[in-house]
Image (tube, rainbow, N blue to C red; front, side, top):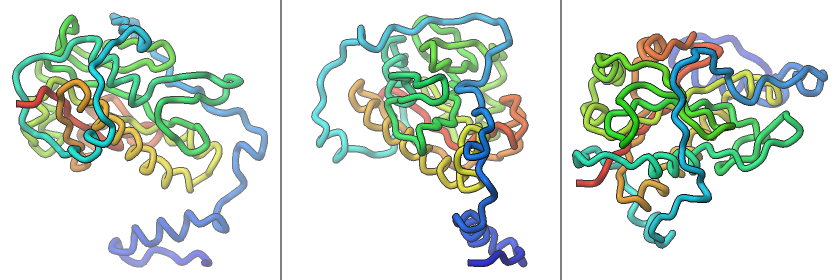
Length: 253
């Protein structure tokens, strides 16, 4: 379908779908021989690192996959008990765990991603996890460890406000914050890659729901937030990196 200029905001979604049809895409960076972006945003803050238990060492009770799927629901009320560090490690592994790096250009992980581009970084707002002080952390998936971003005690309330004051953020043990790095996806798919970012977010969050059921936890996915406010709190520019999805996790009451 040929390009048509956007006339009203109510047409924005339709226009996005039209403009990201294959026939409207410019030449792809990958096809032009341009190098791919880094597999992970470099961590340069030099703050504390927290190693995570290796996934292969984590022993958890078995859960029937059919039960996990049939019983999946969003949970917004959480018990006050904390998560154990090995449980958080398990959830991170299930949602962004790196199984293999291939040719330094892409990764094979525990979730699907268009073209194996895996264009997400995982931030965590931690309230109650054993052996981890409350604060904001980033999951360094290639090394399977946490990196401290902020220990500001006022941050949870500011984050909650940016999520339109949804109270389960403050009540959760941890809130997963998935950050999109679109350049990793558009390198291969140009502007159509923005479609795939949203598909990938669904893959990741569904894995979180299923994995959390295995450790007696509930999850609530969150798509409603003030984009500018949360990106500002996380130190993101809103274009090269931005929040795309989030989910709270905590023990079931």
